[in-house]
Image 1: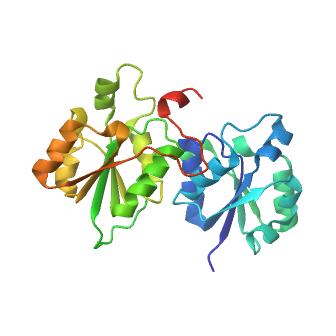
Image 2 (image 1 turned 135 degrees about the vertical axis):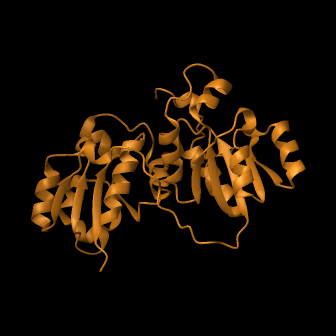
Image 3 (image 1 turned 30 degrees about the vertical axis):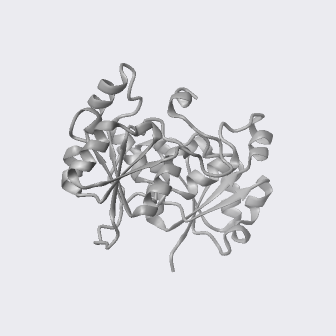
Amino acid sequence: MTKKIIASGSFDNLCSKQVRFLHEISKFGQVHLLLFSDELLDSIGGTEPKFPLPERQYYLRSIRYVNQVHTITDLEQLQNIPEIVDQKADTWFVLPSEEIPQFKQYAESGGFEYRPVTDEQLAGFPENETSRQPSSKKKVIVTGCFDWFHSGHIRFFEEACEYGELFVVVGHDKNIKLLKGPGHPMFSQDERRYMVGAIRFVKQALISSGHGWLDAEPEIRRIKPDIYIVNEDGDKEAKREYCQSCGIEYVVLKRLPKPGLQRRISTNLRGF
């Protein structure tokens, strides 16, 4: 029987360390997240989360390492975890930053293991495990910086993957600095590639090896996509002309958030 793994907390302003945490604990079984509601976080810390519950739910459910997200509105619920996850849990993994004193007591009373995860266990940005099985679907490619990763990027991937198997090429550091100027990118190419690859809508995430607005050209030649998808901000004449010359379908998607969520722009989130 597959083991049930528990993790709990706010998962607010999600960063690579939290995703690495989810990645590592998923190796032990199915991951069930006990996500604290806005009201619960306010009662614990006296402040509202930076990102509202529906947005946090959407982001976490989009991560390939998460099996199910359960909303917790009161810490007392954690005294009966089998009722939440429909059976006894095996292990409760905890990030020190998300730990609350009662957690260990609840785990012991519930009869399952309690295991904090250290920063040393989360070092590096390994390849995301994705299926390498051949597919009859069309190949779709998107490119971008994806520097301050947010729910808008996830929605873009969700829409793009409806056209076929999605390959995402992340701009390498030197080219992003060339195009966007000093101070960019905020996150390294390996970290950005890792965050993109953690999303379940993505078949594979790669780092570009070319330059300019078509820095992904070497990867495009290798992948041989049927469709190149951009959003309105990424629509460039050079990309259109390149796709036309290569016989690649060029699709422009509107930049819209997931229904019910706020529109996010990376520039506005820098330092948020």
